[in-house]
Image 1 (cartoon, rainbow, N blue to C red):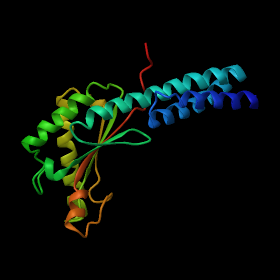
Image 2: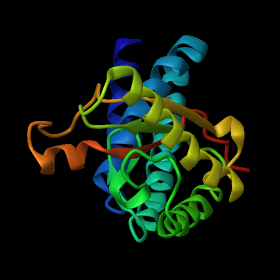
Image 3: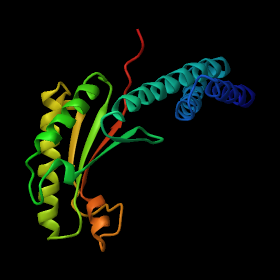
Image 4: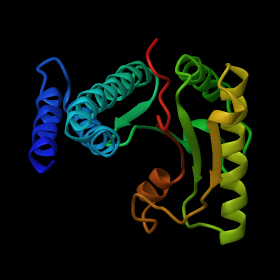
Length: 206
């Protein structure tokens, strides 16, 4: 059993190292292979571990390619970063809203329309919309404002075909700064709406 699982892990990482895969895709394939090996060993013994590793590696690699493709599309219209777990789209509040307002500017709606059109093509996406503020004002006021802004972004995405059950909205106020709130530049960076995209339950290939 131990030898088979060890071989299964080797198969998983061999699949992960395919030359055509990007770094993130390779990580997904390796993780998928390890998970598949464990499940396969429990269900089908040594042989099951090998089969599970191969299937898991392919599934993990497919998710990586899916996210890489989506990032390439999104970064044409917004600031986008690929992470180990998915894709983050960062939209600065100064571009989206006037100070103290949760009403989207016309140019913001145009940008979000493009983002929504892209996300709507990826039915396996789960999108967490996080509203963030700087530390100016009260905690309660910042939470409410960040939630209203996140909800405004959600409405545009839904209008472009993103499904309600794909989206979670959070108003986090000033609880997760990414820069120093003591400077004007830092406060500007902290005022933002982030779209966190991941793929929890990918649809099996036909």
